[in-house]
Length: 181
Image 1 (tube, rainbow, N blue to C red):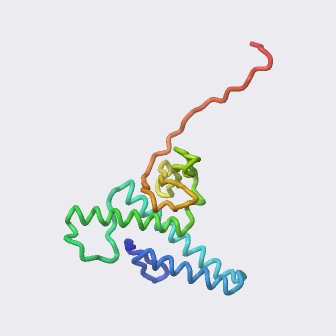
Image 2 (image 1 turned 90 degrees about the horizontal axis):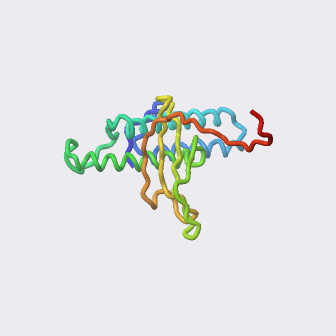
Image 3 (image 1 turned 135 degrees about the vertical axis):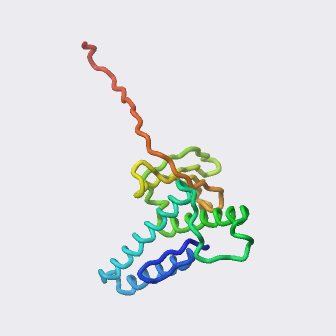
């Protein structure tokens, strides 16, 4: 899947697969060193942090600004000024963001989550997971999908969106033991 140009340590990445492959190479090297080489762990962490920042930048462009970055690789699918071309690129960018989030294991490390619907008989739940934006403090990025032990998020339609964090005041009610004024 194509992505906007991502440059890390002088290496240009133009697809999700290239990022995944580089991450696998770093992980394999660390595994070969029997998890003992601190410099390999540091290299993995720094690459992961750079990819995470890249994902946040993509999320912000996709959901908040609406100004999509140009793909690093072009394809022969029509005029780049054409509305159909932009729709295809928007869809491909959405797929790429989701795949990068999956590779970086964001689905298991969300900042918050909520379940909006559950069906125990069919064994699924509709979930929304949230990620705090490092770009704007009051913004979160949401990923709404169907979670099931039988299939992954990509087998259902999912939505990527941004939301504003709004403070909500609630009250807790406690039983009075003694009625005193």
